[in-house]
Amino acid sequence: MNNDLQMFMFRHTGKGIDYGQLRVEGQDISYMPARGLGSVSFTTPERWHDPRSGLYIPCKWHLTMASAQGIVDLDIVGQGRTYYHYTAKKGVLIMMWILSLANGAFYFPEGRSLPIKDTLVCAEWGQAILVAEETLNGPVA
Image (cartoon, rainbow, N blue to C red; front, side):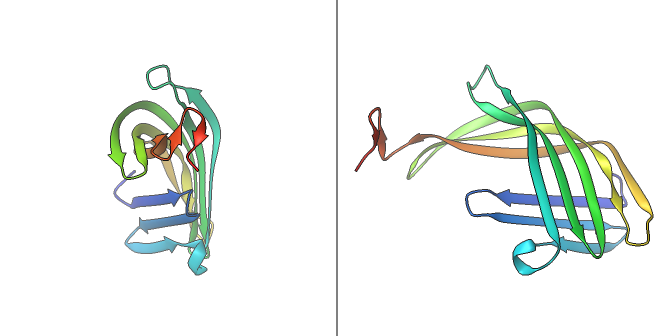
């Protein structure tokens, strides 16, 4: 993004948490729907079968964060990925960093916009791939 706009967005689908933080032209804007601060819509219009991991992973996203202080509207497209595995108490997880490009704009309440063009972003995605309480026959009772 440019020097006038910095953004962070977090989503935990398992816990239903969405959080966005934006700094635009020196103003901080928080998007936290659970606390009544704006709205966040994050959709995955396309997935890709990754031949290296064997997983069907997200590769395109649409993000809209809106509040009375302004609206961020972005299309994000993955360009490359790297991943690592780690063992947790409940099984093995894969975490993937997906290097992406974002295009869209930030819209100020008075109608002015700040374009976001081919901006480098990193999306992190994770998935449990082996579960400790499971066998080939299914979950352990």
